[in-house]
Image (cartoon, rainbow, N blue to C red; front, side, top):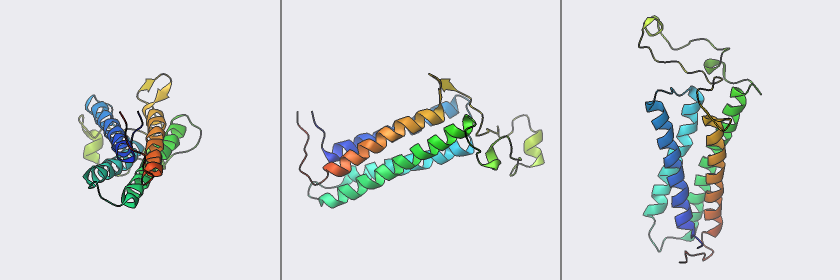
Amino acid sequence: MQLDARRLAILAAAGSAALLAGAYLFQAMGFAPCRMCHWQRWPHMAAIALGVLVWALRPGAPPMALRLLAALGALAAATTAGIGVFHAGVERGWWAGPASCTGTGGLAGLGGADLLSLEGPGVAMCDVVEWWFLGLSMASWNAILSAGLAALWLLAALRAGRGVHATA
C-alpha cells in the first residue's frame, strides 16, 4: 500500500502529536522538563497545526498548497530533531549548553521564596538525564523519531501534485 501525500502528512502530524503527548505524560509522571525540552515541544506544536491544515484542505485544493504545508512540516520536524541532537550532545558533555539551564548556570528567574519552598518549581537542568531507554535519553529519542517524521513530511512534499494516490 502506497500512501498519498495528504495521508503521509497527516501521519507525520499524528507522530508529532504522539511525541508531544509522551512528553506531557512523562511530565505528569514527575519528570520535570528543562528549558531545551520545552524548546523541542514548540516545533511539534507547529507540525500538528500544519497537519490540521492539511486535513482541512479540500479535495480540489491546488497541489502546491499541500506541497508548501508538507515542506513546512518537514522544517518543523527537522527543527525539533536538531534541537534534540543539540540537547543530547549537552547531556553527554560533547559541547556546552546554555548557561541558563546547565550546571554552569545560575538560578536566574527564581526568587527567594522559590528557592526556600519545599514545593518549589522543580528546576530541571539541561545537562542532567533523568530517564534513559536503551542507552538513549528522551532528547535522543526525540531527535531520532523527529528525523523520521521529517522524512515522512518530505515524502509527502515530493508526492504532492505528482498524482501518487493511496491504493488498497
